[in-house]
Image (cartoon, rainbow, N blue to C red; front, side):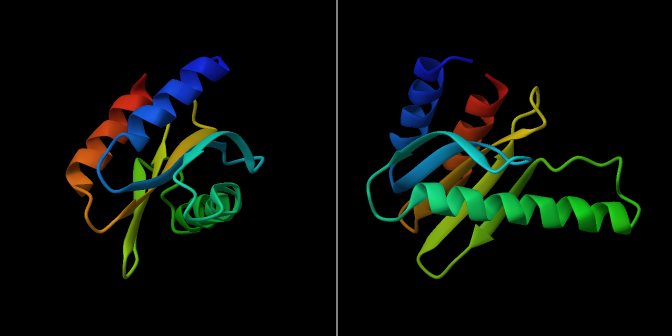
Length: 119
């Protein structure tokens, strides 16, 4: 995937109503491969922090015997925002991260992120 593809995919997510920021992350290394944001918060810092969420969930799954299961997505609901972390099926080391305000349609956001992740 080249940078134009990444930028286009992230801008596609940002076109959704209520989108605040999005990124593509290598969750194993913590490296952010691309970002798009409306400037409301530090997307690179948030991306790096969310790699720790994935690592903690992976470790928990392993410790309770779910090591063969795969995370599809993780949703974090805050008072005024919703955050979605979605694994990229063909690249298990990558995930999409999206932050949306409460005006967003979460089903539409999740569907768009699934579509981008599969592409």
